[in-house]
Image 1: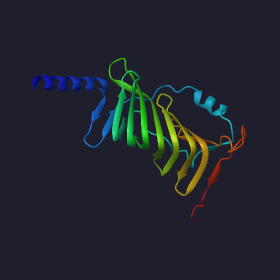
Image 2 (image 1 turned 45 degrees about the horizontal axis):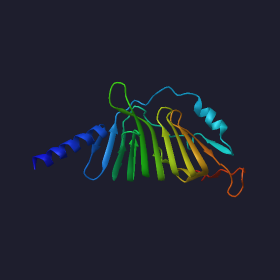
Image 3 (image 1 turned 30 degrees about the horizontal axis):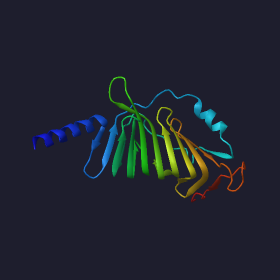
Image 4 (image 1 turned 120 degrees about the horizontal axis):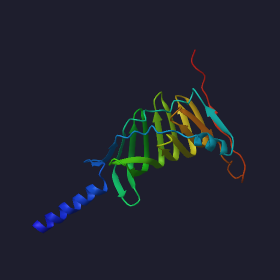
Length: 212
């Protein structure tokens, strides 16, 4: 009996070493890391956007409110959690809900890539959401897609495919979405049209008139 208890304690200690920054809950697993993600932002975003093919639409005041506090902690909840210590990844599975400041993200699966900090602890370097991705910001602004990648150092979100941006009754549809959280600006890329190899698609927008 003592040997069994010792083995259980050893296994628990090993588990704690694998997920030192993750807190286990009763109904869900949550991750709350206080991370300072306000790092210098290179000009890669502008270069990346210029290299994208297809027609695009820049959205300013209408859908340009995607921003948050980079110093706020990132909290993630899900039905289960799988950690690969060698790969430095934590995969949240089932009804995933992530929050940082005023921004929320839901998806079927979320893969968090992290790195060891020099002074101890971990820091998130990338968040990869898959399946029924929904991003909600303040001012009733949202974005939906099949996948999304959040590059924390650049504070840039790339989203696809068949994305839909909404603010109230106004809607913009395209193939890819690029969000710069530093400026709050969103860019929609039409991508290639269906059935046309190398062709260019169209960005579609529906804008309702304001009530007098």
